[in-house]
Length: 356
Image (tube, rainbow, N blue to C red; front, side, top):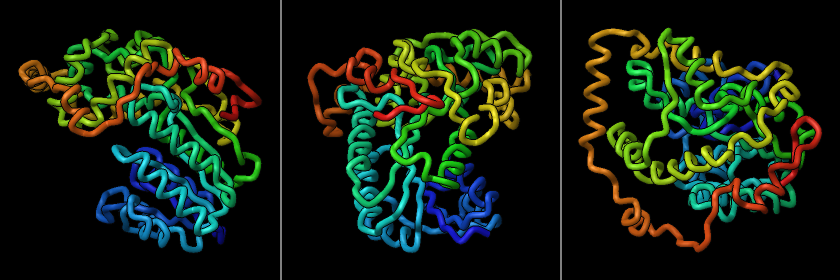
């Protein structure tokens, strides 16, 4: 067992969980920061030997306590309070003299993006870059692969897959593995930013064809009108605040934002294995979904879901954003239309590593 202790926030989340498991496998002591210790993933991490720390990532008192005797940390900001969490964690690691921190940020991170979340990511990035006593490494994936499977019924039963633009969508597992192996030996990575992608850059229809191959039916990539997308998200129970930002990411995807610097060699270079390809990811994420089976009952359930979405009242996003007190900026532009963003993100160095 390595005596080095590593803190992982959102340890039962999409990337924190595989990062924690890999660090334990590599022989490190892991302190897993979670809100709910009874969560299935938290229980699995405890069984594997992790120390479970229960706290509120927005409360600096909890964060300070979680960082006691910690040399390195993986910080995962979670929506909707990216800016508050990021500022809190950056303040705490500097106070506690934490030696290294890997920060999960966002590929689109920009100060002129129409998404509040994306602007918040950019501000958090700046806060971490200004730390004087903590070494920082950034990991900034684009649109994750799991997003394509969040509303699976129309795709699996009626062959309608969402079109989010050309992308090389990374798996949660590869992001977690990359983070774990950076923390295994942080020194060579200090000050660098890594783009994690899957193995291939694929068009929406190429992704649809792969899903079709896996499930044994013809799948077509469809661009959903914005209003219908919002109605679908609402009918599935997604928070309105998150949905209000998703529409900007879809626009950026159609505008080519996710295909830049993709695919990268980051997973191969850092982990020592090829990045997952989209077929592998699809098989993994659909493996246990009962909707994969073609049946009358599944088609009936899907029809009910689609009818519910059609009948769902659409959100008034303008009124919502006003009531939420979102800051209002003029002349906001998608990342791939920003010359500043391009100058930071189009440059590629050794191993597809670049410095913002």
